[in-house]
Image (cartoon, helix red, strand yellow):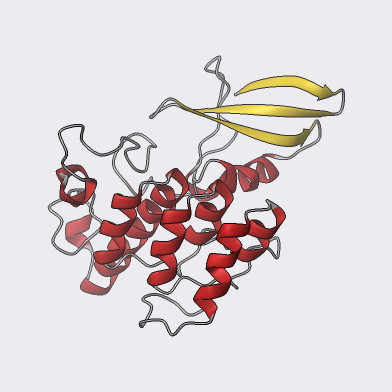
Length: 232
């Protein structure tokens, strides 16, 4: 991690590089006695990576801060989902083999050595978890076509990260109005509270995103189709 001490002696900004994609994320209001858990909680929202999938290490290749409790859910060393936009030739992500082969739907050809030993119930849970992580990250990055594809394939917009956050939380934090609209159409809850007690609507209000806040308000006035996933 590349830290820039440019606020005050006891408060600083931390810049975190996601190795697999080259993306750089900024975490504000860091302090010298911040724990690894507190940093991961911030990154869950700032970087859109559920904290249980994070593996943090210094940019100088020093030892990692901690190791995830379980292997990454999606392909790659630790990178949960490709961050590339739509194909420049016009092929949308929903038609891209990269998405359909991620193991996020029942008919996906993606397999792991242990998958063959899972029972039917465990296999469905495995697919649902992978689909949720992909939806969480795609919502954070604002990949509208990917979000639509995942929702159409049954990814749950009501599932939560270990911090209690839904895809709507991270889409709202990043201000991706199109993704917010799609998630709301599929039954995302504007009242779901994360571990900090914040709802997506609270985040929109706090960041002064009036259009998104209004969109969420209007969604509560309209009947929704049956939402997939756990109840909030």
